[in-house]
Length: 424
Image (cartoon, rainbow, N blue to C red; front, side):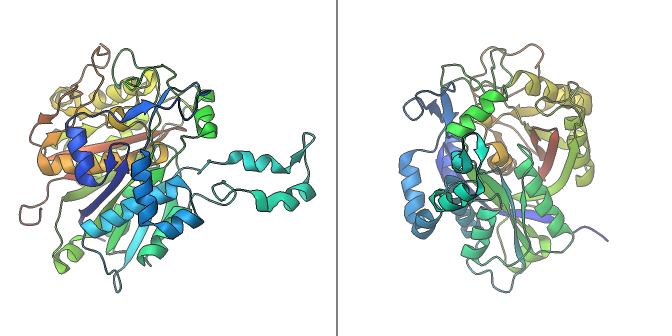
């Protein structure tokens, strides 16, 4: 069975840079850093800084979704609703009746109130009667009441999306896997349109401690501590937010005369099968993820002009990703433009691939790459062009967006220019 072609027709994003695609893209191209001190919020946390969505934007989102804000309250869910609405509006999908529209969503565990679970413990043992008696005290934001798939279900209900609905939870590769699954769904003809992306928020006492215990987070007391590919990089810096892409089949695009940002042409995934908290040192999993995505797109490595890297600002990941890129692209690796969106907004964990995909789509459309900021002392082992500190105008025929997660999960998607008569 031949694969249907698929195109990106709508975008939506809420990130520490602000609300909406235009605001985010303008700030990204200017190299604005949205990572700030969180010591006022969490004075005892060993983590000093994170990419936090400001209170004004949170209030705007709550005012837009007052019922959900009252009944759900959980930040991840509200961010997802806002970004989904923007993407659907951008794609001119106010009425989805009669269309096969599905949701492919990525989410973390929603651990905002894990302490509620300990209500069942009494004298260091679990007392079921005690727990059942106090169950009503569990906060709505708890993992006990807000499972990973909850935002996807609410999005489908709010916007009347009655197609397939799936939630991916595969660490930092989740959102890119969700986008890849959406692509496959459209290619197989199982949906006309897919809303694909993710949301996450773990900037809370439980989340902060979790990443410190993993040994993955930067504890530098510096708001500029997210330094991908820099010799001073010291660990990931957490962020929060949500982003979505609307992915449509070629038939759907032509039927509704939709605008097109670009084509989504390929998807690849792999597993390191190495360690839970460290990438395979030679980047083998990353290599196969990128290789399979390019092969799936039916193009050559020399047609890729840009990579939005996973670029976590960790010692091991940045080096392994660089090694994988050089292994796959050979001499062409030094011609590539590469950047890390995480330097601007932090690591959105399960959702990280979603805003990165949005920025990759815009780069393909506009032939420009946003900077990797805070890259002032390059690691000599990371010796590619990471678009340090200033945006670069450059022709982009095709681009990759990489996501490599804890546990060794890897995912890559390929975006390329569509025909001029289709594009916005």
